[in-house]
Length: 293
Image (cartoon, rainbow, N blue to C red; front, side):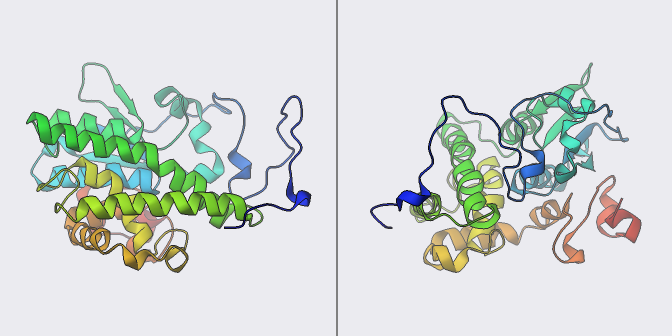
């Protein structure tokens, strides 16, 4: 890191901030300073009790992994429809989506098995809701439960520094800026060290058992150390986090985790994608219409 930034790069703060005509970068077309819907569009509803509206980003993968793991345990009530929400096209600002999630972020879950449809938004809250509903992947004893929830909330506080911080400035900003990249790279490496030290002590984040804490952290930090997001593996020297790599590989071998990572995914190798999931058989009969609904 350098000790100073050239004066030509300094930003003069206006007295009152106004949104720029275009902020630039990959997500400029969906950034806005107000909430609420931009258009009328109701959410579709499929045949299963659980309706998920999402995209196969790390935050979306958390929930589809959980649902596939529940089904693998035999919880038939966890059957679900996963509807694709194209965030680059602003579908998260439709009136139906905003009614389900006033924050207009994926994923959002609507549980139709309740007396009245019950919305759950924020990915960490969805994981905890499902764990408590089905009595799985969240310890009941006080100490391991506290450890599990601590790591779940660690992820919810840490991932924005990886995604919106490092990922944005390293991969998506319209130009490379040393100060934010240095700042967020340092924080991401600190986070990886936190995980690596913990996973040197135990097989999984909450202890001996695989839990919602692992399902939350794996789609972000597991894909990072495998070079699957931001193409920053060499830049961050991710091969040095050997315990994180061991843990990542162990989860990646789980069939339910592999299936969950495919759902609502619209990029990468075609074999890794299932744009929408409405039946367990969709993984085996991924015809072109199912790949691109």
